[in-house]
Image 1 (tube, helix red, strand yellow):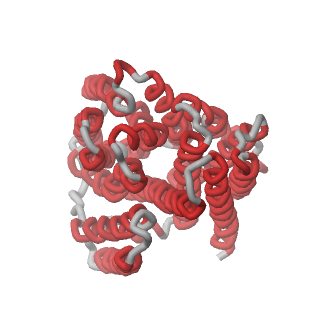
Image 2 (cartoon, rainbow, N blue to C red; image 1 turned 180 degrees about the horizontal axis):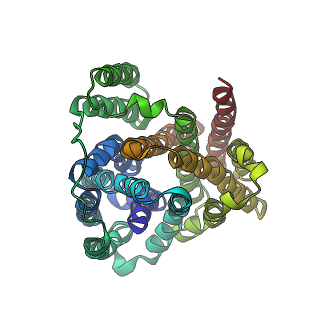
Image 3 (cartoon, helix red, strand yellow; image 1 turned 90 degrees about the vertical axis):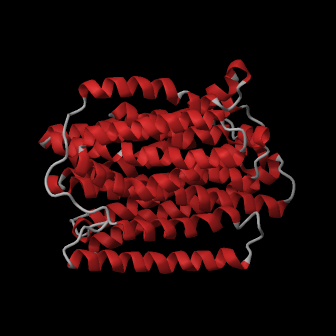
Length: 452
């Protein structure tokens, strides 16, 4: 299950390093590249809760395998795509496969482990999330630079095919043969449509607005997204009061600490997604790094992210309550440090790698304890809703980061003129300080909500 999680998460990030090569070979625009990266996350985030609900109805092991099969087939189609439009479409299908496959992981952990065993299992899950996020960047660089058989960027998708086939074979042997249990809850299709429409109306103008010079429709779309999200919240509350099965159960949001966890996870993943996307564009487009060097640039972030994700529970008890706010503050300082180190178009020297490591530590402290604490005390009957909610927030944060900060980078770059080391560094600095501000807000907002 964790191997499947790693593969699906890898696919969120592995495309970042391949994006410049994809743009060159498929003649894709900046907006199309953002959609290649974010398209996967759009369907993934919107359908995650429905995927969790399907596992409740038809069995988590069985549904996991169905999602794995769809994900593997879509990966093959992405690797064979002949144009940017095809690739975006297949990425959307890939996201559907992940949305069906991945929610079953947390649900099975919640249902099959208790006490300290559950905490350890959640710690392993958090470590996989931590390592997979940046390992995707490194592996993407290796595969693109290797240019296996002259295939360029295509192996970043095709690598999923043999792994997916092996996991399907193993999964049939080792996963629980459950057939679903308890009350068969509705899938809340109206809620799904409302949420999907709100996310789409929010994402599309962020991605396309900069390239289209922010026409009127982009602003109307953002306003409509806000209206639809409000309607979605009202509909979900009314459905719950009537005894129905809302997509996001209000009682889960009212669980102690869940609201704070949602806010923090949204913030940390927005910073994570925006940081990786814009830094990749800068080091490859502005500094001229190869895909391999660009991927290896993130090695310090990956190593410390994984180490912190695995070990934070063993740190002194007196530190535990302060870990997440400290993580946000360290992230803010480190991201700002990256912007300062790369200012002026230089490579930042040795000091920039210390800043990269600081980002990894900060993101891990902001994310891993938050996720583990939010899920460790959730009742088993709420496991699917809680895991689906937090997984959805994780992906929506990632999507928001790529769309918002990617747009800020491209917009700033266009206003400065040619895509050169100096102009790219100026655009990067603007993004890094905006990311630092977001991280700082994550820390302060958490303290305010806790007091309230």
